[in-house]
Amino acid sequence: LNIDAVASMHRLWNDFVVPNLLTTSDPGPYLRSLRQHGITHVRIPVGWWIMEPPTEIPPQHRLHNSEPTNRDKGYTRDGFVSGGIIYLEKLIRLLKRLGMKALIDMHALPGGQVKQM
Image (spheres, rainbow, N blue to C red):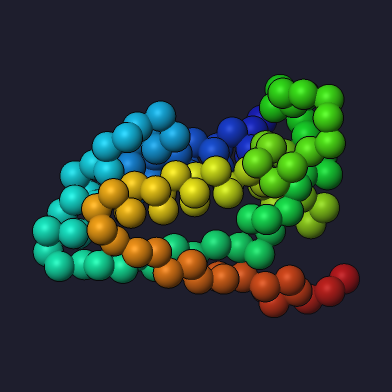
């Protein structure tokens, strides 16, 4: 099985709430429906690694040769997919357009989900 985990996660993040999140300026029917039903806040769970730059960037995802930032696609030192911050920032901008707020929930903490080996 040859799965590109980086591409899979980025596809999920780009289409999970709003189709083509990164390229749209439209909050879409799902977010509009929430707002029309009186929802003013959205909880967004994120992992602690969302702010970490990748330490490994697969060749197909390397866009430049400069020092990686947390916006680059790759793997963090703990093996998590990096680059999710760009989707979080865009989602917050779309929520703001609807007069909604985001509750950023630190969904996972270092060492909290697995035993140290």
